[in-house]
Image (cartoon, rainbow, N blue to C red; front, side, top):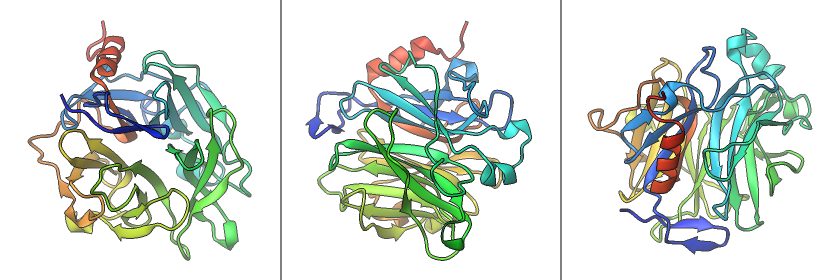
Length: 328
């Protein structure tokens, strides 16, 4: 049994066994593909679709479809939230409309146990951004410095006379009330920026407290000791032959008990689904290596941009009981 150090608020809890994994994702532009799907793993490499590869949660709000979901555990460990893009490409609206005249809201579910989820709620998180065209790939992380959660996402807007995707952020304590959106990450010139994900690394040997991966023409990895402020560019995935023209939607997660971090990237250009990489040092992206294809199984469905949460054995068994591999 592997014990992980997990930050809960300002304290550090050693007691919880976070040796299992839950993947929250969508599958594609099919009738049920743009909804919330779950997959589980007991080692982070071999994955099994839950609920017979069918959705576990559906949105009947906004565009009536969701993509790019992320899952967040609360700082005190008592709640979970799923955040997702309010978007349904299967409605034949087209990508141009989705990018420039799309929904500026995100869809949120809440749970105390990972199996009983609230009804979805729609939050117009980017509506205050001038000429915002969308709100995509929402993520959230607890900020110990401020005691709240920073929610961040991609919005396309013509800020500064350049119409391109940038990362915006808002603050919340309850995922109901949010501060006005503020620009969080931009790149010089016309270069756009999508799909940022931030993780916290509490290991004593880590060079930085936080790491983030973003799609900006590459999958760029950065490091910092605080969420807001200067970030140092550490590298990208060119050492394994991958650029932003090949992959998007990075998922960073800790491979518990292995002393490693996993990175999954969505092979959107070829429609190949996820590709798994791993490293023992996030501060050196050149050390990422492709996972052994004989050691990894992604499950029955083709998985698209999602999020992986480290969970306990008890949580894992509870989720499996609610949504078994082959439901009756």
